[in-house]
Structure formats: C-alpha cells, structure tokens
Length: 181
Image (cartoon, rainbow, N blue to C red; front, side, top):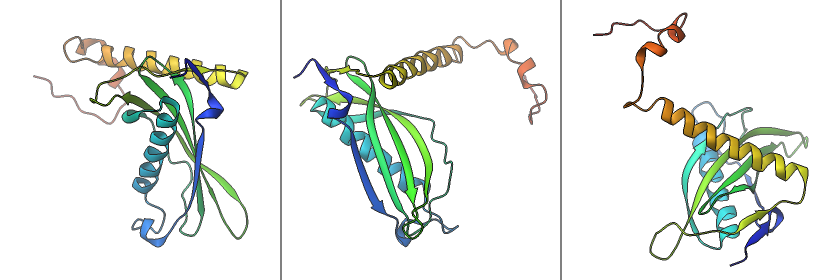
C-alpha cells in the first residue's frame, strides 16, 4: 500500500439519464434515488483510494438545492477530502443537465465518511492524502473541523451529560410547549 495518494488518483464521476422509474409522486426524480447514487460513488471513490472494501459510516447533511427532472442527465463527482487512519471523507457533488438546452444546475453536495475494511471485516489502515493545492488544504481543513464539531455536538447532547436547564432559554419563541415532570 502506498503511504500517500494524490486526490486525483481516486476521483470518480458517473453520469446517468434520469428515467420515469426514478421519479416520485410529484414527477421529479426521487431524492432516495439520488442518495443511492451518491452512496455508490462515495463507495467507489473510497475503495479506489484505500484499495479496500469500504462501508458508509455517516453522511453529513444533504440539502436538495434544485429538483431534478425526468430526462435530465445527472452527473456525480466524488473525491477524497480528508483521510484519517482508517476512515476518509468523500465529497460528492451532484449536477443535473437539461439535454435539450444544455443548462446545468447544482443539485446538492454532501460528505460521506467511509471506513476501509480488511478481509475479516475489521477497520484497516488507509493511505494518507497528498495535497497539492490550496483547494485541497481548504477541503481537508473543513472536513477536519466538521469532524471535531460533530464530536463536540454529540458530547454536548449526550443523554448522560445533558443539562436541561442550560437549554430552556433556547426554546423561547420556538413552536414547542413544555410540560416537564
């Protein structure tokens, strides 16, 4: 296994025509179908980087920015943004293209944390990331910060440590009624 890999070595993209079978009741492409494609490309990118079978550990926020129409081409691009010891963050960008007008729309971006597994299903070490530009530094740093923020958030709201009194003021003006015992 190589010690470090350049981002470009594991980048992948796919383009797929959106069919009527991909649509929801509103006539737009179903978000679940897009999520499935995003997970597949994140797997491909992470596996290419690690040269291992990878599993999805988490998905960080998916905002659907623009609807995707039946008949449009959808292109998904994935690249490694961050590497830990056994895990990596894969950035996935989704764009749609109207094939008759050529108009492209950014539909969503998300970040998948993928973990490499060995033959016995145990987490296994992966190559690090060789960063060669400022964009790579920005993406790596953002992923590192997002990871640290998630840990702090999870710790802060852990049920064994949670202090209700600290958050009662934050509920003011919200659509909630308290009836605490």
